[in-house]
Amino acid sequence: MFGATGDLAQRKLLPGLLHLSCSKLAPEMRVIGTSLDEIDSDAFRKLAQKACKEFAHHKVTDELCEQFISNLTFVPQQAGPEALASAVAEQTEALGGDDVRLLHYLSVPPKAVLSVMDTLHKADLAENSRVIMEKPFGVDLESARDLNKAIHERFDEEQIFRIDHFLGKEAAQNILAFRFANGLFEPIWNRQFIDHIQIDVPERLTVENRAQFYEAVGAFKDMVVTHLFQILAFVAMEPPTELASEAISSEKNKVFRSMRLLDPSQVVRGQYRGYRDMPGVSPESDTETFIALKCEIDNWRWAGVPFFLRTGKGLAEGQRIISIAFHEPPRSMFPPGSGVGQKGPDHLTFDLADVSRMSLSFYGKRPGPGMKLDKLSLQFTMEETGHAGDVLEAYERLILDAMRGDRTLYNTAEGIERLWEVSAPLLEDPPPVRSYDIDSWGPNAVHPLIAPRAWRLPFERGWRGKK
Ligand code: BG6
Image 1 (spheres, rainbow, N blue to C red):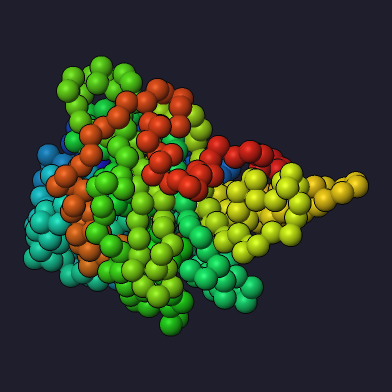
Image 2 (cartoon, protein in one colour):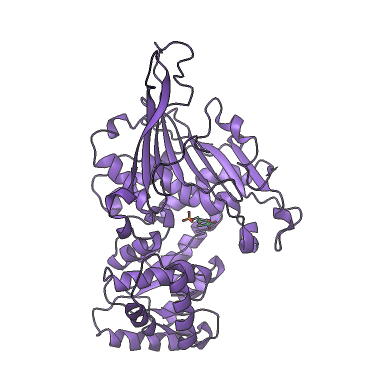
C-alpha cells in the first residue's frame, strides 16, 4: 500500500482491509505499507490501530483486530526498491509461497504514480501483479492519453484497476439489479416514459483542510467527470449481454460515446463565499466548489431526455440521490384545485447512502369527500431487510473485486478518455463562477438551468424510517 499513512489509507483502506481479513471474505493476506514518512512497522501498526478504531464500519473483536494489526509491516519509501522487495519476499514466505498474488494500492498523488510504478519494476514486483489506481486520471483529454500511454509502457491494461468508489456503493450496484432483474421497470426506462433524470450529490462539508488539493481541481473534476458520470452510465446503459466486466464496460462506454459534448451555456459554476479566504486558495480563485449541468445522450433510448447533474461543497444538505422523473399524463380529468401535478411528476428515487433506499412517488386520493390528490410514496430501505449489516463499504467491495481480478466495477482507459473529450468544451470555456452562501442550495442560476422542471431536492417529505 503506497501512501499507507495518508488520509485515504486511514479512513478507508486500513479499516476496509481489516474487515475483509476478519470476515474471511478475502483470502489470507499480508499488508505492507510504504510512504514518505520515515516510521517503522511498530509506528505504522499504532497508526493503523487508531485508524481502524476510529473509522471501521463493522464491529471486530479486539482479538481479530490485534491479529490483523500484528501482521502489518512498513517500509519507508526512502529505503528503496530492494528493501520493499525483501519485505514482500518475507511476507510471501509467511503466507506459504507460490500461490501468493500481489495487489498494489497506489494511494498517492498523480505526480507520484509513474515513479511508484517504476519502483515496482525495480523491485521486481510488477509481473503478474494488479495495481489499483486512484483518480485523477488526467486533467483533460491530452493528459489522460499521456498518462494511459505511460502506464501501458509499464503495465498491461489488464493489470490496472482504476477505482471510482461510487461504483462500489451497494446502492449503485443495486441500480443494475433493479433495472435488469425485474420485468416491471425496464420496459418504461426510456424516452417514451421518462421526462428527465437528476443525479444530485450536494455535500455539507466545505473543502476544509483539503483546500490546497481542491484549488487545482474543483467540483467538476473532483466529482462529475468521475463519480457522477459513472453513475449516469449505470442509469443509462443498455442491458449488457452478461454480468461480466467486458460486457458491462462495453455498454458503459457506449453511453459515454453517445454523450453530447458539454455545452458551457448549460453549466452553472459556483463558489461558496469565504472559499477565497481559505489557506492555500488564491484570493482571485476561479475554482468552482459547486457545479450543475445538463447532459444529453444522443441515442434512441434517451434522445430528448435531459440528465441534470449537480454537486457542491458547503450546501444545505448532504444527499446522494438519483431521481427519475416520469412524464405526466397527457390530459387531466381532475378538477382545478385537486392538486394533480402540483407536486411535480411521479418519481423513482434512489438514495446512494450506504444503507440504500428507494422510493416511488405517485398521486393518490386524499380520503374524504371530493377528489383532492396528494403525493404518496412507496419506500424501501435496506434497513428493513436484516441485511444492512452485510453491506460492504465501497472500498471494501472494490478491493475485494481487485483481489479476485474482477474489473466489473472499475473504469477503463477508453471510458475515461471519452469523458475528457465530452468535457473539453467546458474546460476550454468555463462560465464564470457565481458566489453562493454556505448552507444554501448554490447559486440561483441553477433554477433557470432546469426550468420549467424543478430540482427534486430539498425533499418536501423526508425518507420514512430510520435515518
Ligand atoms: C471523493 C471526493 O472522491 O468523493 C470528495 O474527492 C467527496 O470531494 C467524496 O467528498 C464523496 O464521497 P462519499 O462516498 O462520501 O459520497
